[in-house]
Length: 217
Image (tube, rainbow, N blue to C red; front, side, top):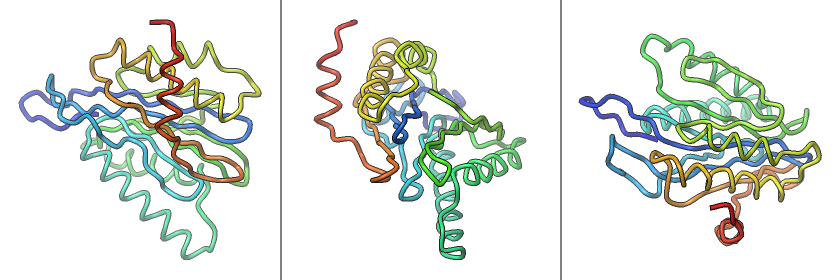
């Protein structure tokens, strides 16, 4: 992610990833935020909880991403209070798509992954800065490190992958991007959103163990 610098414009750097598993969804990200060539933060939050079974990852401008998350979280809470049921993942993604498309001439500079589980099962959608919405069937990555992450995600994906295996694959993909993309760095965070237990943050010790086992660098 990047902070807005009027002299240099938006200089984006991030790696986020999502994967659909047979028992849920895994979302992950590194934690570096940059301002041009300056590392502005080594502990930036890029994964947010929208509801008990829905999460979102953000890439792009920090302020834009935070505003979009606040709007969509408020809308999801209002819907839940009025209807006594949570919004579906598709509905939240469509709302995000409409919000970003309506502002396309003065866009929110942010790339989003929305993932979780609802009555239709595990789902992931990606939404670009001008509102383009795509349902992802297997894996997805955003940010400057995404080309590197995609190679690892797609080579390691299998149809019956579990969330535990998905956590390992997502962490490996982000770690690979960190090693080769200057806009991505520092620590890795990940969440798993399961059919049974909902939104859960992956313990830091699990992520460190996965990284310690990586031997391709």
